[in-house]
Amino acid sequence: MKTIEFDEERAKTIFGLLTDFWHMARPLIKLPQDRLPLLKDASPEELANYLFFLAIFQRGGVISDTPSDAVHRIYATRPDLFDPFRVARMTKDEILRAIEVETVLGYKIEEFAQAWIKNARFLVDRFDGNALNLVDAPDFAEAYGRVQKKLYGIRMKIFSLFVIWLQERGLVRRFAVVPPPIDFHALRLLISTGVVKTENLEEPIPAKILDTKTAKEYPQLALALVGRTNINVNEWVTDSVALGCMERIEKFGYTHLDINPGMWTFSRNFCSKARQNTLSRRKSRLLDPAVLWAEPGLWGKTQDACGVCPVSKYCRRVFPSGPYYRFGRLVPIERLDRFAADRLIAYPEEPEKVRLKLIVKFLTRDGNGHAVAPPQRTAVEQISLFVDP
Ligand code: SF4
Image 1: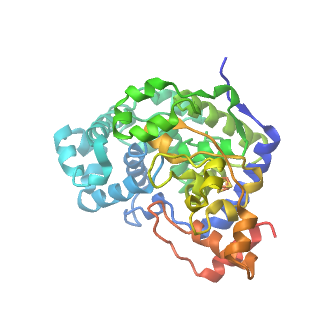
Image 2: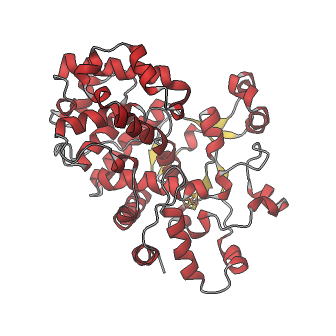
Image 3: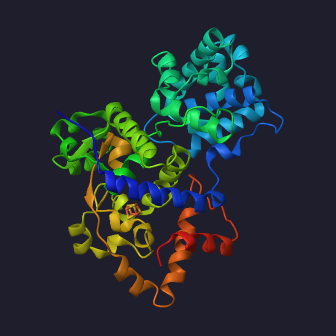
């Protein structure tokens, strides 16, 4: 039988590090939900309803800034779309016309419009049009149980995210424990650092992926993947990891309000800049150690994130995003530790100072890759409190 296993000691260690990381990083980072366009005097109900609609756009495998920024822009011209009573009287086509101006919302735009209207109607019919009533329950499990399979496109991951957004703003004080939303970023960090053990979920990728529509678009990558070990990620995997994390966060005395953003930000800002987490220039080769040793040019000239990563000593395997985004598969690659060699070659002087500056560079980006520049000195000082000497 397939099971998700946790390494208890490692979970305790990594959750502790992520908590410290998040306490240090929080003032330096702007999350998508920090840029809400609502007026300061918006009521708790208006704020909760806005977050409810915003959450719809985080479905799929990755939580991201891009759709959030688009939803913020939609609000600027059409605030009526965030009033469930008014939306409930609209047609799906009206919603579609209003949101399709945001092309970044992509090919799922029809589904988003559907979710927008169906969920507004559900909110009006069952919860008096007030998203705060969704969390009027003694615990997360009961709140989620009341809406499970009734909200369109909102499953546990999205519902958790919505609850956490409310909690971050003090709009709900219940629910001491909430399963952290497990998207690609969270999952790969948990597996890379050995918190989650997936050996019994791993199996070779079957040749039948060559028959898929995606394989027609990415034939070289599809060929490169056949036969490689992978984890086929599905809802059972992400929900099991989320519930397992929730149990251990509580057991070790941490909080999901630190672990969730800490995990997401860490993987998004550091792991996504690990050289081996990208594909080669031809977009088809996975950068196994043997490939990099044979063609060192593939490593590139700039320092990658692993070389300055504060948890690298726990990280044995990396998971490039390409196979996941395109085929829904987590494909492990043995991590090649080039840290010492890179420092010697690229940064002969004051390596520790350079390392801190690089950490700041990686850390202070938003999800769209834009620098969110805090004063450099403050950032370096903050980070030096966290990073091992
Ligand atoms: S060593 Fe690299 S892949 Fe591993 S956790 Fe750090 S940045 Fe991520």
